[in-house]
Image (cartoon, rainbow, N blue to C red; front, side, top):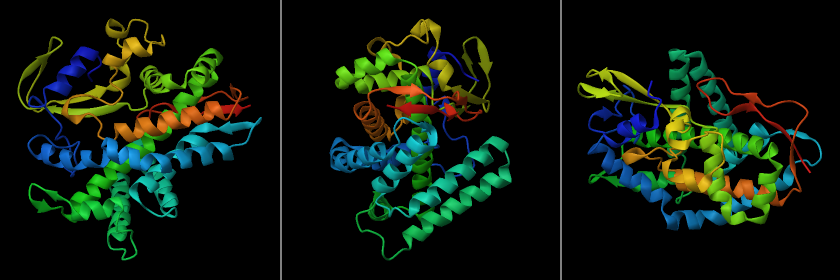
Length: 338
């Protein structure tokens, strides 16, 4: 387990020594190394360009405004499910160009995947993965699918001069969905819990909405939504005085690296500007999260709308409940919008 910020940076920047090919299953692009990773990453990055984000921004804003407007006022709500999960599912289906009916299938798959991960039941995890693959294949074969949805774009795309295999499209979509729905859900719960406990920060951000982006990143540094990623050593190397042999498995612990006191000082101190250059919220190196632009956009939007459409966000009667490893953030966050 790699805990220190400096050591995690070594793993992130030396992809020749610390490989991402840790799974026997196809995982695009995060389970690949160059040059294979480079070809697929170029394709995937094309979905998250500034132009693509600008085109999707009005629809994302519409989803966020409608969601926050629908929330009850002056009574307790559970924010992880009612805000985080709803946001993640609605934005994901809209971004992919899928009909709203797909949301419930994604919800069921996300819950089943989480349970299989927690139980470490490999057979259950395989069944969940297969069920999701079957759903994606149904969409691929749907003659009524929009010609401009993400899957249509992947079908027509070329990687290294060839079309993508169905298995590759399924892998890309599965990774997008897993990263989007699970991590965004967790992130929103963390943000809402933090704001509910800090009335002064709420006031500052209502007065200075331009600071929201950096504030959100800093809140998620303090309380990490993503717990781990894996690497495997390709050669014998020393890391922080520890000998790592070829073939050894390493687990990056993101929350610990982002709270390393040798880098951040008081890990709980809210210092967005000072901590931004070292913040590993979206990773680093060639494997930095490709969906970061979309994640930042929707997380900033939901935070802005929650603040603008309320006079205060207060803790609910019931205390927040921490999620169980390997999940990050909270299982439940009870708050009240005034």
